[in-house]
Length: 209
Figure 1 (cartoon, helix red, strand yellow):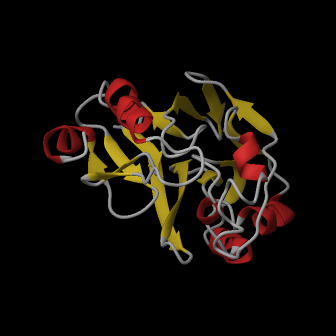
Figure 2 (cartoon, one colour):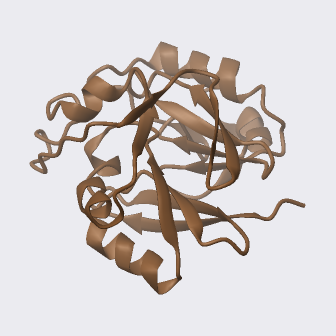
């Protein structure tokens, strides 16, 4: 059994899930999609004795990036994202922050390519490019732990919206079928909003696929 653990803090107007993973006994954590209130996130991590080792984005929409600037001020760590998502993360129109009157722009320090495997905080992650919700959206598969950080690609019996800039429903469905549904059925899916699910459950019950 893996000793990789996962935590969740839900924040912001869109009730976005910010996840963090770590090895049991280690203080280093990887943070995914700091949704809002970076100062608050930092204080919560400090309370638990955690040290932020990296920040990873599944995609660049405003409700997944609002907490990054303040969190980076306190941690001075790198921001990682898919190579095709950098422009959206920086552009206040494309990332919808202007539309929702929460203007925010971030500039990823390191860009991932599809299928790339990277080790951070002693945890290996595979980057799975899943365009559709946004042009450069991606998921992170932690094979050792048997779970997937899916962002807004795949939800419990639902999928991400595709009516925002760079979205495409056809592309999203192909991403899910060709990239995610090939993962083991028992893979636990941790989405950007709402409760967790499994690949097996979504294959059987997701009405969009």
